[in-house]
Image (cartoon, rainbow, N blue to C red; front, top):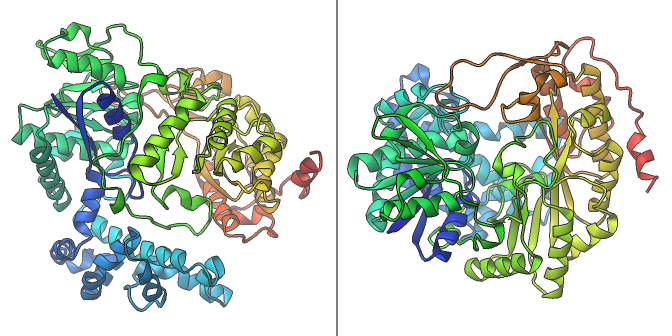
Length: 631
């Protein structure tokens, strides 16, 4: 039996999404013939060629002139320039032609469409060169990559406006899948005539199948925005290779399809697995090899002989985290990923810049109490660790395979005890890597531990400051205070570790005053050098979180959901406070964008909100500084 794992569009362009690498490494450790392909990257690279741009032009010319966006018109006007430079720009962003930076920085080589307008607006207002301010004389490579990224973003807008309105670099057709109560929107989209994007994906799918000749294809869907493309891939396989079995899994499936009853999805796939895939896959392989009955499948939805959706979960223990093997990137085109530089901020850029080896330090979350989190699901609730020695063994194996020493630890919250042991083992064995990850800003991360982590190669940390209000942090059972977060983040920063804060607004019972005060705290965090980057997320209530399961405890009532046969996750709620959080979100995001660029610290935070009667902050302007003097 041969198993092919596929990454469907769209996930990331700078590095492979790790799910297929994890599964392929595990299956090979079990003696299974397993391979993988990244069709997300292949789809984008297929369009970003001279021939691909010619196809986009043909589609754009078919649009009535009155329906052409500014991006499309600019593309058509400067098509020759785009076609002559696209191969050069892609090679530069792949790291294969670094000397091109000088030509790109001249701003005469690449056509500059609507996405470049923000640079010109800044230069007009500030009377200078925004890129020179950001990068200085020595940052020519970064400057050029930022310009080349804007160039690609212009082309992505053209793809969306002229080829497929669902296209985005990361979220592709997300609205078709996210929290959809029935399969109908996806079914209708899949029954429609294929777009040029779909035709490209069909061709890539057939090429991959012909190359590998698999018995079983696994489609990993981490986000709602990958579901449509995954099913287009499955549709192509079912049409042209009906003998091949197809399995579907991944983060989106594990979260949203737990109450699936809609039969129609089984016109595209044969098996839908939940939670960690190792044990379900071993059972499925035995079943397909005739060594296990369907009744003994593990955590799998199937369509049975009575044409009904059936969930089968033969009770077997999960594969221990120490036994899942080492991820492998074999088969993925590691030299073809694009290092994009959307954001000039040195911390924020890590998510799109550079090809990071993804690694999990521990399965699940050791805290698993946050009321906004899906703590009832396996990926949070089942906490398991591995020894530091084994983790470093895995790191050394991955470095030997990929030739690259950058690691992103993708834990929900990496435990400080494990990170300390890992750092000590890296130092003891003289293994030199660069790494970053996600944590809870808990007091265990002392300045001394921060120094140790930095010595072991830690360059950045992200974590949740969330609402930046002690009342709300207590309500959401975060287990930290604003003062504690200030001290922990300052310890990281003083050790030379960049810090990103996940921020939240719109939590149940959050008032306008608390939102303004939270922004003042965030301003002071930036000003004091505690954090270098942040992002405000709108709170979403999910059915798997404590808020969704006990809304009365948080002062809200849930809006009844419709009858659900497909996806179930987000749930609307009624907050008696009546605050318009979406309107406040505009000011929050504008403020933090400026803070990340070192701008606007002197401004009163209430002025970021274009709302009448916005209250002044009640937080003293030196509150964080006072907290830090307590160290």
